[in-house]
Structures are given as C-alpha cells and as structure tokens.
Length: 308
Image 1 (cartoon, rainbow, N blue to C red):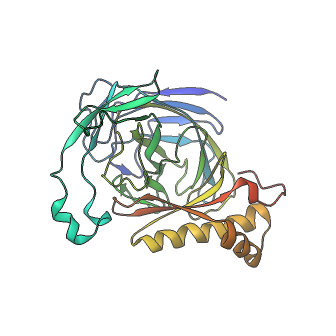
Image 2 (image 1 turned 135 degrees about the vertical axis):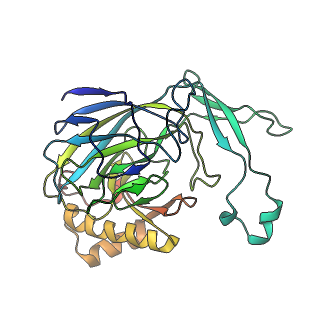
C-alpha cells in the first residue's frame, strides 16, 4: 500500500467528471487536506466558495462502471483550533406554528481541543455554564462521480454519495460507492468536529481537516446505493426527498445486501429486518434527505460473507 499526500490547489462544488488531482493504485492510502463547508482552510482563509468545496477527484486505477469503490476512513484530524455552527433549528424539524419563535439565524464559533477530546461553544449558552461536548470527527460530504457525465452539487446527495452528513462516517467505518465512470473519481471534504443526527441546524461544528482514507476496488460488485460497515454492524444509505423515499432506497439496498453477502432469500431477510433493523435519520436539512438502514453485528448470519 502506497500512501499519497494530496494538498489541492483547486476545489470543486460538484461531484462529476473533473480532471483528476491524483492517480492512485487499487489499495492505496490518501492523506488529504480539506476545507470547511464555506471554503476556509487550516488558517481560516477562504480558498474556495460554498457549498462544501471538495478535495479531489482521485482516480483509482482499475475502477470501472459495474464495480464498487470501497473507502475505509482511517483518520480524521481537525487542522484548526476553531470551528463554527449555526444557532437555530431548521424550520422543517419543528411544528409550523413554532417557526416564528425560532431565534434569528446566526453563526457561532467553537473551540476545538484534540488533546482534551472536546469542543466548546464560544458564546453564551445557558445560566448553567458552558456547552462542552466530546470531539467526534466525521465526514459530511464524500463520494464518486455519477454515471452519464453528470456533475451534481455538493449541497445534495444521491446514489453516488455526496452531502449525506451522517455522524457515522467516522474513523473505523467503511463505505462502498457504485462506480459510475472509469477511475471512480473520488471526492471528499466538509469535515465536522461533531454533529447530532439530522444536521438539524444545517451544520455540524464545521472546520478544516486532514483526512486519511484507504481506497479499494471491488470488481464486479454492482450496488445501487452506498453500503458500509463499522464495529456495530452493517448499513446501507438512501438519499432522497421525501424522507420515506430515502428509507425505501436504504431498505431495498439492505435486502439486496443480505441476499448477496449473507445468502438470505427475501423472506429470510424480511424476518431479520422485521425484528432487528435499526434506522437512523442522518440528514433532514439538505435538498435530499439521508436515511441509514442498519443491521447489528450480533444478529447477522454466521456465514462467510462476501468481501465487504
């Protein structure tokens, strides 16, 4: 495995057929510098425009349509001592008659302390004192170029990945994307120092990052939506609006996966999902919502699964 360092001089607000910034071999590792959601670098200097300027694309040798590109998130290191977030809930997550009472939208800074493993709000919080939360880095936006020559905004998401903003995309997790073009053309960025489910204020704690990922081509693995695994089990991702359509995509992909990787027929997979499935609302802020369908590791069939 060769390790490459990518410090880009240009960034993209779409995932699409852009000129590669880097060529790597199947199985290589990339250490990439990324900007925050509005283009701020490790010094807080604006290097690109919103939304979610991406580092990349990375061309992976051997990746072709009909394959999957498997990404292992090895490390996510904030490169700034501060981040920022917004202060008011999205109108679509509260009752309509409550919307007028929401506060005026503002942006506030957070202190990021990797040594203490914490983030601290640098603004008045409550009479009880500061708001200090555990540091929990995650990737907000990443994926591959879609098929058909499309270039899709980094504000949204689809089968190719994109702006999914799920807190589960953290070190130790892996995810596979369907390859749409030769070389896959992988992009990443929009790191969050932490975020709750749904990204319901429209941000996590946004900051610049150094992200380390390993890239592996899964030949002939034709998938429709992102699939992944972590220490807790396996998961599939659906991106769409309305929310029930995102859930449908994620559940259908899990049915396929349980058949392909674990040998379950549709009845067996339905029994397992009916009694063991877990759903997470990853994002309800972006143009496409994101739902995660998860099966815990302790209930998966004890059979040799296909390489995931």
